[in-house]
Image (cartoon, rainbow, N blue to C red; front, side):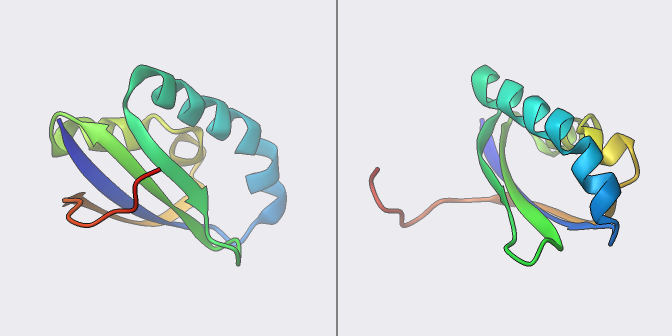
Length: 92
């Protein structure tokens, strides 16, 4: 299992984002329950989000992102998806 960081930029359409957000969050909650999501959250300015996936490889992380309702509804304009290694972290 590897970690993948996705930095997403959203379309500047607050109404469409608000409309799809409940299904987007339900999808991410399902990934969390399956052990496929480490954490996620939007940027405070509403421009996008950071999602940390737990996936076997880049191909699986790409599928997880592609199946997100925000992706399926064309609400993401830019994606940076890279494998990410945790080196230093605060214990929770």
